Image (cartoon, rainbow, N blue to C red; front, side):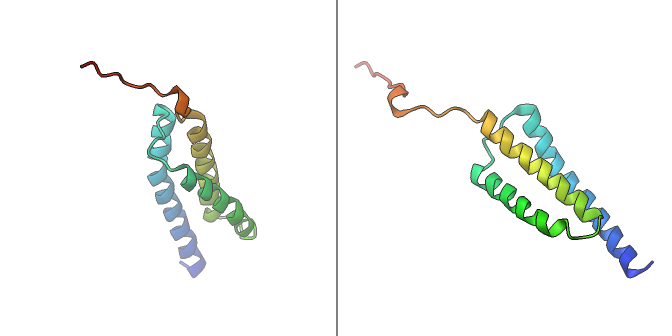
Length: 103
């Protein structure tokens, strides 16, 4: 096996491992719509990073990195969309309930 063949095999295996490690969290988020444990700032930064990383990836030959990057673009985009869509609405300070204590 040539060096390029070994690199392609390693890229394919690592792509499958990274994708399979991320897929359960995406499936759980889609199923439960509970994204309270995800940081909005992290998801925004991940999407910005993916957008910038596209410049690099499109200049590489088609291969496992394209599949991995495409997977990350789709999953982080979905997670950001779901985070914005399903997060609970914030109450304004005037609408908070106050508890009354009876003595």
